[in-house]
Image (cartoon, rainbow, N blue to C red; front, side):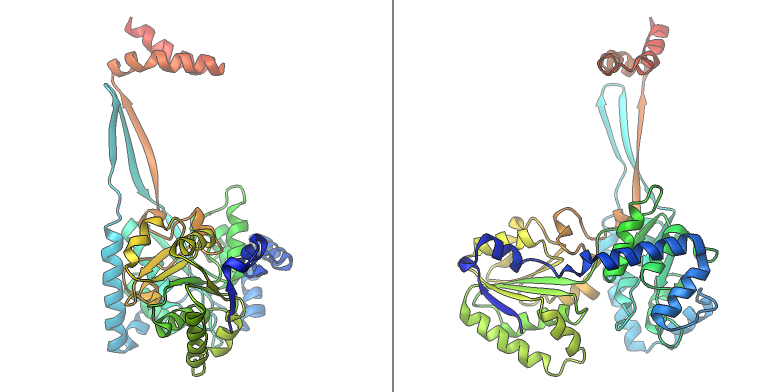
Length: 433
C-alpha cells in the first residue's frame, strides 16, 4: 500500500519528491473558498455562519451556543470508566503544563539600569475542536487545560455540530471537566472567521488555536495575516508521522503507529525510514494484515497512498531525512533511541522506544498534541502554556543609571538622526549637572 524506495538510488529531485506532502493545502480553489468564507462572515456575522453550517454540515442551528446545562449533563451521563480515563489524562496534562509556567525575569544590565520581563495571559483564546468523523475530545483537553493554567479568562470553544444538530456528548463532557462554558456549534473556515472577527453571538478572540483540515488551516493563515487580525498558534493541518526503524524494531508496532496516523484523514501522511528491504517487506505485510479489520479502513487506505517506506544505508541518513522532513510526530524505534535525540532539530514531538506509541502523546502522557505540520516544525513549536501568554518588558533607571547610560543613547540617536530621542535624554542630564 505504501511506496517502497531505495533512498540511495534516488536523484536529489526524486528524494525531494519522496518527502513531499500532499499538495491539497496549496489548492487555489480551497484558498479562494476560504477567502470568500472569511469575507462573508466578516460582513454577515451570525447569518453567514448559519448559512455555511447548513451548507457544509447539513443542519440548521438556531442557537449556536450550547446551553451550560447540556455541558453539565454530558458529564453526569458519561460512564465512570470514561470519567476515570479523562481524569487521568487531565492530571498528566496539568502536571506537564503547570511546570511550564514562566517566572518574571529581572536583570540589572548595568548599575542603575533594571530590566524585567513579565508574563501576562491573553485575555481571550478561541479553541477550535474538529468534529467530522472523529470527535476529538483530546483536542479540547489539550487546548483548554493549558489555556486555564496560563490564566486566560475567556476560553471560547468552536466545534461543528453533528448530523443531529448537537455537539458530541463526549466533547461536552470534556468541556465540563476543563471548566469550559462557552461552546459554539460551528466548524470549518466559518468557525475560524467567527472567532477572528467576532459575530453578534460569538466573541472575537485575540488568538486562535487548534488543528483542522485544509480549509481550517487556510482560514487560520489568511485571517492572521490581516492587519489587526488574531494571532494563531501554528500551522496545523492534516496529521503526519515519521517512524525511524532499524532491523530490531517490531514491524507490528511500526505498522500500528503508521495506521494510527493514517486513520485520521485521507490527506494524512505517514513515512517509515528503515534499514533494509527485508524490514520493508515485513512492514508492508503487517500493514496489510492490520488494516483489514480497521473500522476506518477506507480513510487509512487513501492516506497510505501518500505514504512512503524509505530504505537507507545508515543512521546518519535517517537523521538527515527526519530533519529535512520535519515531521509533526517522530517515532524512534531503534536500539538506544535516546542517543539520537540531540541530533533531531526539526520535529513537533518525539516518541522514543518500542513502548512509546504515538497514541500516548495524542491522549494522556502529558505533552501537547497540537503540533506543527507540513514542515512547519522547522520554525514552530507545538502548543505550550506560553502559547497562551504574552510578555511585557519593563525598565527602570536610577539617576546614576541614566548618567551612565545616557551618553551612549545620545550618541546612537545622533547616528540615526533622531534629535528628539537625543533631547529626551539630554534634557534630563542637564537637570543633573
